[in-house]
Structure formats: structure tokens, C-alpha cells
Length: 86
Ligand code: SF4
Ligand code: SF4
Image (cartoon, rainbow, N blue to C red):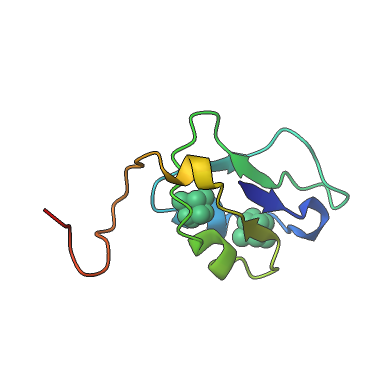
């Protein structure tokens, strides 16, 4: 799950642009700054890499992995550290 502190978001869209699996989009709601904060897309490809949490300049995103969701294989552009086990 991705938790966004909506009113902290300034709408720079770095998280949306840099997500390695294109899992984020602008939401329909406006925050108190008149910005549309990010949300996960309906077809959620998030792999909980936490990159968006790391790069958000306003600390507006928290990534909270759901243990059940984590078990589902997700596509990623990044190889796991140490290579792929065979
Ligand atoms: S990186 Fe942070 S401030 Fe920028 S759009 Fe995403 S949540 Fe908002
Ligand atoms: S945790 Fe990673 S995959 Fe998920 S939305 Fe953030 S950057 Fe994208």
C-alpha cells in the first residue's frame, strides 16, 4: 500500500515520472494547495521498491508493503541484487 500525505504534496510529479514500473498516476482529488497528489493506478504494478518514498522531496509518500501482495510476482525493470536464482 502507498500512503500519500495529500496536503504535503506539491505536485512535482517526480514520483510519477520516476517510478520504475509506471505504477503511479495523478489522483482526481485536489489537496488544499490545489494539487492532484499521486495514487496507485487501478492496475497496480507496484513492487514496493520504495523509490518514490526515497525521492519525494516533501516526504509525502510512505510505502507500506502488504505481506499478501508482496507474495504476488510483480514485473520490474530492475534485476534483484545478487542476480536471479535458478
Ligand atoms: S514526489 Fe512527492 S511532492 Fe512530488 S508529486 Fe510525488 S508525492 Fe507529490
Ligand atoms: S514503491 Fe516503487 S514501484 Fe511502487 S509506486 Fe513507488 S516507485 Fe513505483
